[in-house]
Length: 433
Image 1 (cartoon, rainbow, N blue to C red):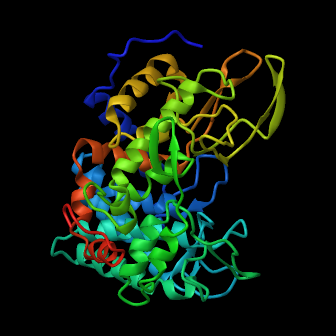
Image 2 (cartoon, rainbow, N blue to C red):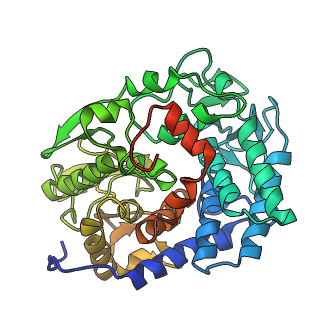
């Protein structure tokens, strides 16, 4: 394990801007300019991820503000993307792009048709719609192009049939497949669907009924870990993704009012719990500690089993890793640490500096690579490092660095009538609301 560094480690604002710019380049350079689709990863032949595409739509306004891209170029990219999703084949056919206002999780990068037999995904469609609404809020000038952005974004949002997505019950299903119908799983337990329920409740056309939100929060679990009480979710991304768009500081729903905290404070506690888990390192993985933490959905070195230090270890490939009960195979994700920046900069910034100094090979053309595993080493003895980049990781880095630095996206989306209406319908009150 590398030697411990003194606590005064910190990552400067200039370093954050460089990381943000490099990460933004993923959307700049990997997007298909013909249709606006963004690949799931840099792996050869990777399909489009509609989540990554939604993240790109939200990142373009940040890029304009930071001068990573001109407004005209961002408008052109945004229009290309929104026109594609509005005009693409929409219906129950297995090779369509979407159905009932939702879109398939993975699409062919060239044709935009469903690929990998993927599901019509309610959560991935949520992130795509959130990106579109970000564009509608930001591109507010009275020009033909920017007016079209607003019209298309509203049309795409209005087409989503949230009532259908419930499949007759209160909570929303994970999705649907043309071959087999609705997926049996529903959005229950605290997770990244917070944004899904807010947008579903606010729909101007097919809104979720008022009882769908309490039906969801009834499935929450409150836990105490390492001295911190919090609304439990094991992987870090759950505590981050909805927060990219919504400023939860000082606003509470009924569940959080009873607990005396807000979702922002909950994410702060979740960040500290992740660090504490790494310090305790109950499974004895190499490298974990005060500056090296972050279990989330990420690429991994597996599937493989190998003996390390006399102990047989099982390693996974892409997997949702979680604390405190796993899965945990020694794989950590720097992007998940960056995306916690607004919640706990006092522990995130020193960790970023430590990453930067101790694992310089973790940084390449698009910023921090997806993940690394110090326990799983190759013949050279070097720790395993993910070869590719994932759009799912790049978006939170760009957007959460910006929310930490300026609060830009939060301020922008505080003006979005759908976000305001959805929060109010969910019972949120106080603070900026």
